[in-house]
Image (cartoon, rainbow, N blue to C red):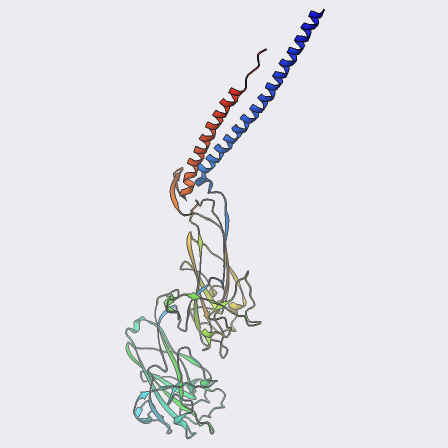
Length: 496
């Protein structure tokens, strides 16, 4: 009995011990499996990272939407302004540079108005008047000239009628290349002018009260010439062309004043379309930052997504148009589109005072003349007051940029506005949206990689990443093998 009890006891103890040992093995086995699985997952993660790094040049082609915004007043440049139509090759000749005078006379020279002897007979340089007072007309680039530089009126100190003869020469090498020639002229008080001895115009033609040789009334008539400038066409000849002006200064009832004249001759030659050449403008080819204009209340009311009106200066008085005549101004802005990018949309909003043409990469995109025939930029057009004035509107256009640097250029024309000086103003806002789905990474320093027959520019550091990934993967695999061997050495099944 005791033997059986002893045997059973031994068996139970032995079985319990064996069971305990097996449970310990299972427990240790479970820990081993978990650790092995952990190392396996780590290896798989590292392999995935290695593959990702190895395919980085290709993965760089994922969609990356981008947007470029251009706003006037921030990066806008200007080349200056010009009083000469920039669409033509033009020469100008103005009073005050080489104008001659033959003197003056108080005797009506109607019998021989172009004979220098009628006025004293001796030609001398006319004097620029430095203190001409309003309301004398102004002509861009020209100066009022008379007997002396003062406005006291030496030749009319006797307060009676006086006549003065002026002359100026200029040369045209080949008249067949001339596309247009004109003169702007104003005089105090009345004038007659001749081209190569032929009468071109007389104040009497457009204001009967302002006669030159007759007994017309003095200042106070219905229209006094010196208050405004008139424009006339000229028919030139090859070689020297001579302009002569007879100016009458009326008795001004106790006020001494000069026989003054102000003129500008413009000779336009065959169209050269140099309007985008910055050297044509007052900046002489040097681009400067355009100035954001301090808006005069109620003047320019348009807005465009944060853009600011720009012009010559920040002062709304308009330095470029203080002479109250036509002026043109050139502006530019630039933006970059990566090579290979896909353009989703590209639009621009534009408003200008008074008219504009804009170009993208040297190609004309739109002109005010396209939607308002009265608002031409380079041709003849009415002054403000026509059927549609551009600065009262803002217009949206679609543009087509090219890969790389894109240059936007705008020529803005400011019309003669009578007695009101005003600036050449511009407002624009452009928005270009594109994606870089086909654009390889280009961070410097770079190298070339060919993937599937396509050459990409990639970072040199990026090229080392796949090799780094392979090295790390190899180290971990080796570590896993060592650890596996270690675990197998430590784990043994107990003997029964």
